[in-house]
Structure formats: C-alpha cells, structure tokens
Image 1 (cartoon, protein in one colour):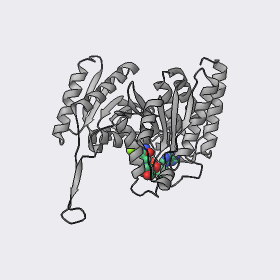
Image 2 (cartoon, helix red, strand yellow):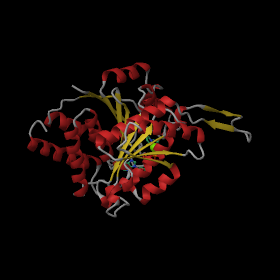
Image 3 (cartoon, rainbow, N blue to C red):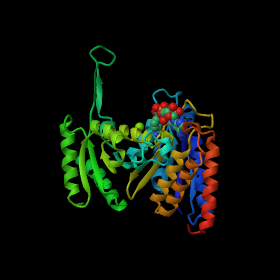
Image 4 (tube, protein in one colour):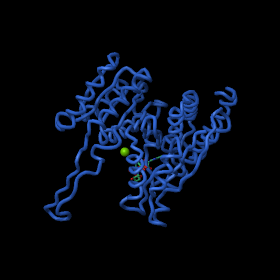
Length: 359
Ligand code: NAI
Ligand code: MG
C-alpha cells in the first residue's frame, strides 16, 4: 500500500493541501487504490517554537518510508530570511536528489487564459527543469559585504552528469507520451561554457530518438515565443533558473498560478509534489486560495503510482469544475477553497462509483 507523506507547511499551504487530502481519501475509499497518509508538521510555526526546521532523522524517514511526498507551500513573513523553507524544500530536493522538476502547463479552460484564441487553447507544454544545480547550488560568496566595494558572486554550476540525466529524462518522457517536439532552452550565446555543455549533451542524447523533432532556443526568445505561439512547444528542457522563470510565465498562460502543479522527481526513487504557487500570505486564513494546483498535484501523484486512468479521471473532474464555474475568486468565481475541493471530491466519487470499483 503506497504511503504518502503530507507536509501542509505555511500560509495557504494547509488550506490547499487539505483539499488535496480530501481527494486522496475519496480515491482510497472509492477506487481500487489503497493509500496510507501521514501528516508532517514541518512549518514556520514549528520552526519559531522549537528552532528546528527539519532533522536528519526526519530526512531519513521521509526518504525511506514513503512512496511520495505532497507539500503545500513554505514561506512565512515571521521568518524574514525564510531559512526554514530553504532547509526543508531545498533540503528535500537536494538530499533526495530530486533532479527533475516537471511542470505541465495546459489550458484547462480557455476562458481563464490570456490565450483565448483557439490556437492558444491548444497549449500542451511540459517543462523539465533541472532541480539540483545551476545557480541554486549555493556556490559563490560575498567579499567586503555592506561596503561600496562589495563583490557578490553566484556561480552557475553545470555538471555533465546533472545535464545528462535531466536531458535523458525529458527525452524519455517525450517518447512515452508520444510528444513530437523537444526544445532545449539556454543562453548559449552569452553563457558559452554552460551552453556548450548543454548543447553537446542534448545533441548526443537526441541521436537515440531520431523520430523526435529537436530544437534549441535562447531563453529570451523562448519567453517571447511562449506567448506568441504557445501551442508550438511540447517538451522543454532547461536549467534550474530558466525553468523557474519560464514555468511561472507558463502558469500564467494556463489561467493563473493557482492552477499549476509541479513534480520533483528522482525517477525510480523519490517523488515530491507541490503546487507551483507559494504560501500567499496576502490571502492566507481567508479560505479563498485556489486548491486546484494542489489537486492537480494529486493527478501527477497518481501517474507516478502507475494509476494513469485515475489520473485522467481526476483531471477531467477539475476541468468540469472550471467549466461549471465552481472556482475561487482568483478565477473570477465566488466559491471558497473548501467549496471547490468538496465539489471536485463529490463529483469524482460519483464518477468512480459509476465506473465500478476498478476504475
Ligand atoms: P505566491 O505564489 O505565494 O503568491 C503570489 C500571488 O499569487 C499572490 O498575490 C497570491 O495571493 C496569489 N496566489 C498564490 N497562490 C494562490 C492560490 N492558490 N489561489 C489564489 N491566489 C494565489 O508567491 P510570493 O508572494 O512571491 O511568495 C509568498 C511566500 O511563498 C514567500 O515566503 C515565498 O518564499 C514562498 N514561496 C514558496 C514556494 C514553495 O513552497 N514552493 C514557491 C514560491 C514562493
Ligand atoms: Mg518559482
């Protein structure tokens, strides 16, 4: 029986994760899937009370005892440096070596997207962001801090091993999903050392996939192109920083950051799912956060568990909610977080009951 660790976190994290957990309970009770769920109170509250963000023992247990982790969001204004969030989230990404950050971006309901035109509605983009190195590796330092002679260096770390494994993961995914085009995004004209490595690896891996159309684009051109012709791109593979930036852009194209899910993966080993958005302190506690990004994460979790049919069922139910206008204020609706979560849970339970226990 798959064991899932739930980390609600801070701000709207517990609100949206509560609705994702509701969906997991429906799946446990209505489908053939049985799940065990444990809640982990890693948060700013605990950090402020005890000074502990996450212990070595907790890392080991999360690593050894669970098939997957589902996380709400971390970040709290009472912890100005956000060090607890860094320790927990970057800690898990690095310690569990979750080298793939996968972010699917589809237009679920064109009316919510700035791409209302028919070709915009066809966006079906899958971003593979390198998740363990690049500019987030923490290499660098500061000299003469606080003076007019200050020097701040942030190194962009790219290893052959790190680039090779994310590029391979993206190609494998394109092949399995039957997607026809894969695009490398870099800044090889200005960042020639990193760009050279990424392009050599991309070309080498591509040789094993003669049927896939390959492209390389500079990140600035890609930012423009994603808006100009979002339906052109399918799989995008890129570095940590460029993936971070492009996936927020793509989330806005989907219809809003409240809809976007992400998976942090070490294929075959570990998986952590989280909505793309943060803890949204400006609306925390009001009960109006959009839970769809978190619920969409459950569908990625189902894919991870090999339950593709249930995953598609859940996605279709989220789309039903959007079509019927059962949405939170960020999408122009009047429903609250719990209202949207309950509606999707009830509709899903109904659909699964109709389909029989082996849906
Ligand atoms: P944010 O994503 O929390 O909020 C940006 C804007 O989007 C806000 O106006 C917010 O109200 C809105 N928003 C976000 N999620 C929403 C939802 N589910 N429904 C409706 N509206 C939503 O990003 P921000 O403000 O830059 O960061 C806030 C805190 O979250 C910071 O402490 C930051 O470090 C942290 N953060 C954590 C992440 C994570 O845990 N993976 C990711 C991004 C930020
Ligand atoms: Mg980001």
